[in-house]
Image (cartoon, rainbow, N blue to C red; front, side, top):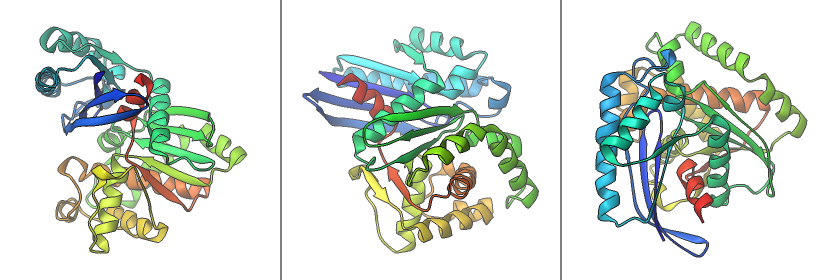
Length: 304
């Protein structure tokens, strides 16, 4: 069976096409497009007209690719930007009418479950772990061990939301950092309670920003990394820490000039580094791993 998975993220739309035979999917095609669906007014829960149209145009292209690959089954999952927008249903309806793609706007809980399934498929979970997925609209956390998912939750503190609300200085001022961290702390008391009880040993970052961290760390050592060929990557903690502090204290222009940061993440990577550092410190974890498998691989896993 040939399947297509579309992940409609707040920043990026992803398309994955795979052949399923037995338990191991064979990836035939993969692409992502920086649609920026949450641009401008994500905290007002509105998809602005320009972003709305970019999303539809992207899905038209995906639809043609799906036809070209003669796909049997299509699953499209929309996350924070669509589920929280007052005109999210309008977007889903317009996409169906204009591209033929039927979209499910999934809940934060469902999103966390699918991310967990994707990370599990990567083989990253070898011990009691805290999984973290930093999106544009939301951030998901999952506490798990090698056998089961223990706890999961989605928080509306994604990088695009934080940027639009708090990112008012360049480089980020101490006052802005304080406001961001205070806001994060207020939102996540239940996360810290569950981590205090279970004491996870490692933080597993799901794709996205963590792939950028890996790119920057390896470039620092004049190495190259083929992320598309990796399922997991374990960071040297000190290397990660150096890169994160450099990002948090850099100007926009300095980040533009850093090889390894895609244009979409030039500013959002600061938010990602702040959140990640805060979680590592607050939960007292000093090990960090990347899983390149994320929500779309979780959707794929659920179809096998």
